Amino acid sequence: MSSKFVSTVLTILFINHTGGLEVTEIPGIDAEVAAVARVLHHDYEAAIPPRNARKGLRLRAGNVQVGDHALLEELYPEPRFNAWSVGEVHVIDRAIVPNGRRDHFEQNAHYHNLLNHLTATARNIARRCRTSSIRRKWLREFELHREAAAESIGVIAQGSVGRSERQRLALPWNRLCSR
Image (cartoon, rainbow, N blue to C red; front, side, top):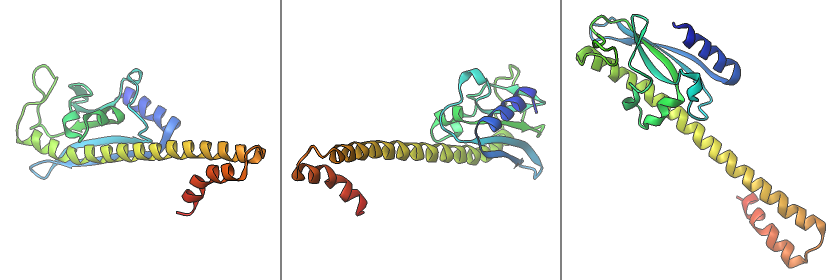
């Protein structure tokens, strides 16, 4: 495992740890292990900032990175979620060969098998990102409702409005509470 990856993992673990490190062996066509994937799960609150230089699911062969962080974006239902993740896939299968420029792999059945198995990992990450996004949206909506309710309560508590205005201010909150 590269030292940059380890330091990024440790930084994220200390800052925002909720999911841990997932290590997955990816089977090859010949029933041997084709690769080992290490994915750091965290809060998935947004894309990893570029200054961390470790965002995305990355491929390595012979402990040298092949391609960049965007190489596996096509596996995600929404490619932007690749930038929300941190992970490395260490290719072990010698039939999965980097091209001469080391910016991609030679296209063969072994490489496509690897991609098929990694698609499940990418979908899992995307599901976590989407769930986190929905949770944050609900929290924002709740906070807006809480602030509006506090404002209405403040107006009613002042006693400066008549009965009909108090009922009008309280009506939306009574409806919400009776659900």
